[in-house]
Amino acid sequence: MNEDQFNELMKKLEILNKLVAFNIISGKKLKEQVTTLYALGIPITDIATIVGKKPTDIGQYIYRKKSKK
Image 1 (cartoon, rainbow, N blue to C red):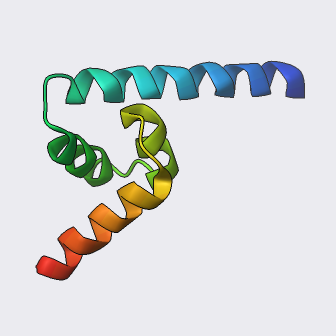
Image 2 (tube, rainbow, N blue to C red):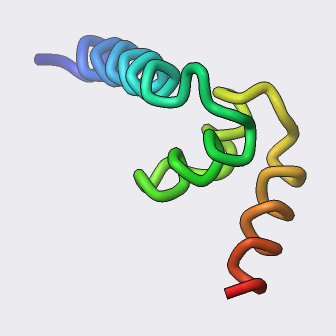
């Protein structure tokens, strides 16, 4: 496998991961979506992309949630 093939495979895996994540959170409220995706180890920037919000908004929500504990 050459580098171009590897990069193409990685792009497809990223898309697949996002689709699986979207399926996991479908039907849940936004806060529950964020909490679930973050618990799965998905980076804040990817969570923002998946739920259609700004990364700063997601980061602030997670920070506030952690501060309450």
